[in-house]
Amino acid sequence: GHKPPLFLIHPVGGTLFWYLSLIKHGTFDRPIYGIQDPGLFKTKNEIPFKTIEEMASAYLNLIRTVQPEGPYLLAGASAGGVISFEIAHQLLSNAETVAFLGLFDSWVPHPEKMRRQELFEAVMRRQYHQMQDNFAALGLDSQESLAKLQWQRVQMLDRYEAKKINTQLTLFKALDVISIYQPYED
Picture 1 (cartoon, rainbow, N blue to C red):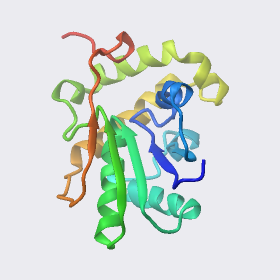
Picture 2: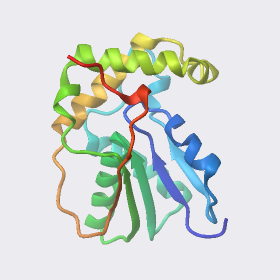
Picture 3: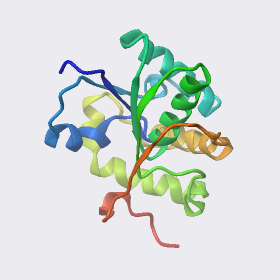
């Protein structure tokens, strides 16, 4: 397409698998870029960021390599919505324009039930099992490493304090939650 690009930020899993159906079934008149978490490809559960603000700043630098100035179009699913929100905050703080901010089933703070590491990692392992082929294609085969990396991201989300921003945002909420995203019952 020829319009300004849309930047999709990864959910808590760090990959862009969440967006495959959206891209497959959508009709777009603009380029779409996805940002995966570079922590996926580090060794020994090394996390490249300590805060959502640091992560957003690094991603904003990546975005600017493609699009040096706005207006910017940002979106993210789940934790990606929170990261997109922080990117928008950083842009607006520098008097830049955010033309679209889309949040797909995003939240702040993280749901209470998913703040228990054992439950969170069990849900993530179940998701990995169902998406095993996708992860293998990326060379990501350690479910334990991925679960720990995701848990570190959840801790970052729990520490994040959303600031007020002066822009419109669009929140997309699912009507039904498919089984892969259903938390285990207590």
